[in-house]
Image: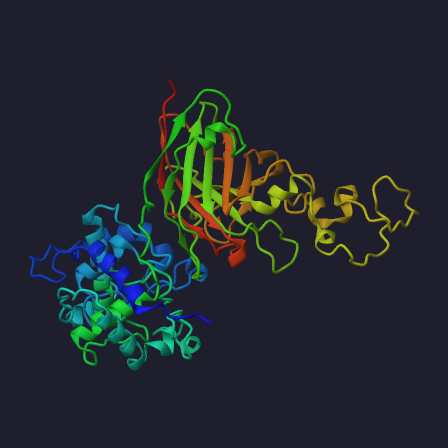
Length: 528
């Protein structure tokens, strides 16, 4: 049973929090009168949209892109003109849409596109608005004016706790704010999809923003297309501030500082000598890793957090260190309910940036996929008898090196069996091969559902992964140039796109259920 923290404790925490919030930072025109910026160009916005957004939202904006089936929450259907994040109670303003495009939506697969030029982002706003007739038939309502918040006090916290109950917040979000209220399992959005109430005990992931002023705006405007209403008519200004303070107090701590970057440049430094595959080697231990933000494609309680990346090359080979936090190591996939920890690095095969979600028909990608269970198999290939040591077995006459008539019932290692009678192994399926040379699979894809393993002779990506103290460290190494047309080729001095993915087996991650990054830029330092 969870107990509430004493108000005196949370008050002290919120005095510090209030000091750290500082002045509210708004986009121009959000709360004060500012000259309206020029409208974006729909045609230019369409080109940017098709390149960056259509994979999730669909070419026609109906939320039916090729990645839709692996995403939860589902991508927005722009044709309805209904948006969750806005500063009005009706249509969002241009700046509302610009804010979402620029900042992304925490806790969802919607990334920040803040590195795009502002003209591109405003063109995107114009195109998104062109997808719904509401933007020509209706006008945006009055914007929520956000006054200066009152300082935190014990009285405000007590008032907020009272209104949390009286306003019915507990019915969805639960008494302790964990999103487990009596109505939580029945909630759906405007499109009929199940919707999960926010868990207030997780700091920093509220979709409309997790600062006190963001919560006030959400309480005033509501969240479009969801059961979350506006409380502008039922709660006064002071009550909304009090409720905001109480909601923040349920996490017990402020949101963590967002040190990880969503899009950045990774420098692959030139070194002399060999590139070790051992993550404990001095080269990797001393490497300065860059933290890159990941986003889970499927909503789950715990996010993966940033993946930390370092890279070196020696003019012949290129190597990467991937490091991420994971409290439980999952290296066994011997039952249907078992899922592995894993990580992947992705590169385009040709110039340009195809969809970062597994590439596309005209933009194939090369993927290096490290698997924790394959790592364990390097020491000894594990099979079903490792999970069920006392299982029964039948007569098996096809052991290599034994006479055909010898119907031995002696249990032997999988590698001693005859591959002709083990279909996966006999067909060359890497998942069935008992003798592993590397824990990394070399693959290609042209979109979701097209992942294809390269031939055994092209499985040339070496590597090694170690889990210790709640953290994975994985190294992947491959020749800069291989002569294989299905491999991405690297050259010193060049810059290529690179993206990452991480799977957490303990949380049921598999296939498209994973945490990903958008394209980063990998720059290979010239040799000296």
